[in-house]
Image (cartoon, rainbow, N blue to C red):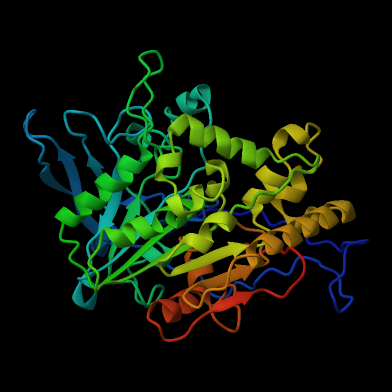
Length: 452
C-alpha cells in the first residue's frame, strides 16, 4: 500500500508548574490518549489528498475501487416540470448537487444548489440510512454571509467533488462495525443557519438566499427518491450540524415510516449560553442576529418557542427537553470551539495571550486553566440541568476537542477515548440497537489534550 506520509511537528512536553490539581491532588496536566498502531489506510484509484475537516492533514493515501460511488447531478430537465432528472458519473465519494427547480427555492447562500455525498449501502444495510450534516458556524449579518458565500460554507461552487468518509461514515467493518454497510450520506453545509433559515424574498442588492430549512427538506425528499424505504435511520451532524441535528430531530422522524427505528446523534453541537471572560453573553446576541437574519424562528421547535424567546431556542440546553425522538449527545465539557469562540473570542484577546493555550491545554498558564475549568463547570451545570430521559444517551468527555464521529481515531480505534470501557462507536451502537443504555460523563475534573 503506497502512502504519502505528511510530517508532523512534535510539541514539547515539558513539566508544568503551578497548575490546578484534581480530587486526588494530582496535577491536571495533559494526559493524551495513547496512539497505538497506524491510522487506517484509505484506498482509491488515484492519489487524492484528503483533508480531515475537523483537524490537520495527516496523510495522503492511494485509494482503491471500493471507494467509488455514483456522482449524481440533479437538475431540471424541463423549465415547467417540477421533477428532477439524474445523470450518473463515477467519482470517488462524489458529490450530488441538487440543481434547484425553476423557482429557485432550495439554494445555498449564493443561489447555488445544495449538495450531499452518498455511499450506497449493501447486504444487511440496504434498508438502513445514516445522514450526517456538516458543520461550519453561522453567519449573522449581510456582510458576514456575503463573505461566507465565497467559500465552501456558502456555495457548492467552492466545494470539492470528493469527501472523506471516516468514523461513523467509514465503509470498513473493522473501523465502523455497526454502520459500515448502511447507506451513508454526508450533507454539505452552505446556508449558515444550521438548516433553519426561511426567507422568501431575496434582496436585489446583495443577492443572498436564506433557505436552510428548505435545503433540509429538499435533500430528505431527494434521498427518498433514491429509495429511502427504510428499517433503520440515524440523523447526525457535527458542530453546527450537531445543533441542526437537535433542532431537526423530530422533523426527521416525522418524514419517515412509523415502524422505522429512527434516532438522532448530535456531535459537538451542545453549545451553551456561556459568558466570555469579560462577563458578556456574546453567543446569545449572535444567535439572536442569526435567527432574525435567516427567519429561523418559524423552523425552531414550537414547543420551545412557545415557552421562551426564539434566540434561546437555539441553545440545546433549552431545546433538548422538548425533543421526543431518542437523542444521543456526544460532546466535551471543555469543547475547544466553545473555549475559543464563546469563552475567549478574538476581540477580547488582542495581544493573543490565549493563542497557545487555545491550541493545546498543556500550554495554558495556571490562571488560564482555572478559567477553563470554570467554563467546564458551567457546561456541566447546563447539561445536567436537562430533564431526565431514559431514551437519551450521552458520552461527555473532558477532551479539549471539537467533533469526534468523523474521525476514526476518536470514533473506534485502539486509541479512542473511552468511558465505562467503551468507545464512542460502541456506546452509540449499544444505545441505537437497544442493547444497553449509555449515559456517562467523564469524571476527570480538568481539560486534557486528546489529539491522536
